[in-house]
Amino acid sequence: MSISGKGLLLVVSGPAGSGKGTVLKCLMEKNDDFVYSVSATTRAPRPGEVNGVNYHYISTEEFEERIKNGGMLEYTRYCENYYGTPKKEAEEVLHSGKNLILEIEVEGAENVKRLYPDAVLIMLLPPSFSVQESRLRGRGTESEEVILKRLERTREELKRLGSYDYVVYNRDGGAEMTADDIISIVRAEKLRLLRSPDAAKKYFE
Amino acid sequence: MSISGKGLLLVVSGPAGSGKGTVLKCLMEKNDDFVYSVSATTRAPRPGEVNGVNYHYISTEEFEERIKNGGMLEYTRYCENYYGTPKKEAEEVLHSGKNLILEIEVEGAENVKRLYPDAVLIMLLPPSFSVQESRLRGRGTESEEVILKRLERTREELKRLGSYDYVVYNRDGGAEMTADDIISIVRAEKLRLLRSPDAAKKYFE
Image (tube, rainbow over all chains, first blue to last red; front, side, top):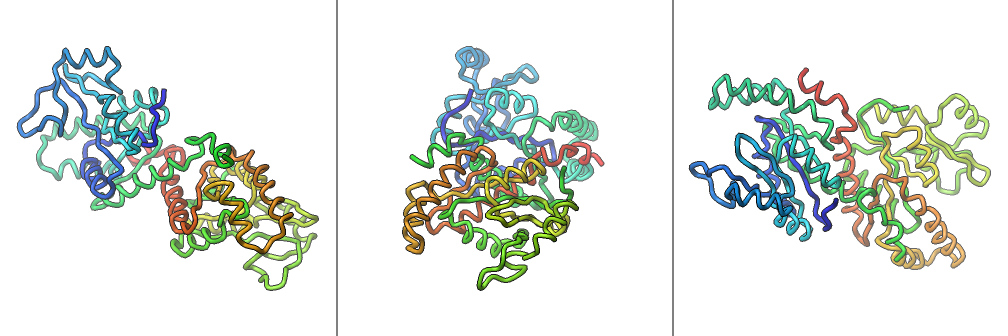
């Protein structure tokens, strides 16, 4: 299956402490060819969260209806709640020629790649595990238990790093450089011959 | 076989009228991470050509000796003369971390890819065949016969476009943009997981 259109379907994953939020914000500010995909979820909004910004909040009934009708590009279930990418919005963005960013985790990323082999999977990492550790502790907002859980989760997730196309390291204070890395990846991917197998034919038209 | 080192082995091909010379000059001016590989040849220098700049001019005996000793990264024979890439210089550049540009034709490019699967093959093209045609005629320096021969050659060469990794179109007056395309390709290629299969292991070190 492939989504037609010139935009690129971009999956960005990254463990806690990778600085993913800052990098994506910076990317979107630098370059308006990127659109962030707002997920749909059945979990209740937390204080301060805004419908249509943080998530599209919908009922379990509606979510399951959408799954049945093929209205979800990908979805997962986590802690009794559904999370997923609305397909219609995704297609509109890609058809318009913009690149769509899905910020999802390893399992979702693998599902997307299976359904859309054209998707580009990027893993964002801190420069090293020890930097990740000190970033998480440096926040001072999470208990030691939570921190250890997140680090353990990173160990598990990186066992599946091989599913990704690119790995980008986000250095301290380097969000802009990391955003430029992602911009370069997209620019290069669009020039890959694999994406235009009829290039020779078109050249002579 | 693979050349160790952090630099990228870059093959750039392009038919007459692609503006390859201008683009590579612009690339080298913009970014000193790229080194142009000066070929060795057994043909006599033409008026104005400088040894070590246009080519390394060596004897047939020496060239064949180098082939025998594995001193040529790739070579070809054309109109009774040898043309090839000296291996030692290439390795020095790549070990220093710089990217080495080989400006060679389709057959040589395919040979390089066979020997060095890590090499990145870029085909530079005019925006279309009709633009190529008018660029060649616009020069006013070549006979109609030569022009038709070159266009015919392009038809033959593009049958093997599938051997390339990337195709980059060089628009009129767009040499700088095209050079930026090549810079993006190299930046992205260095982030490809295929180039660092032990990334996960290294992350925890």
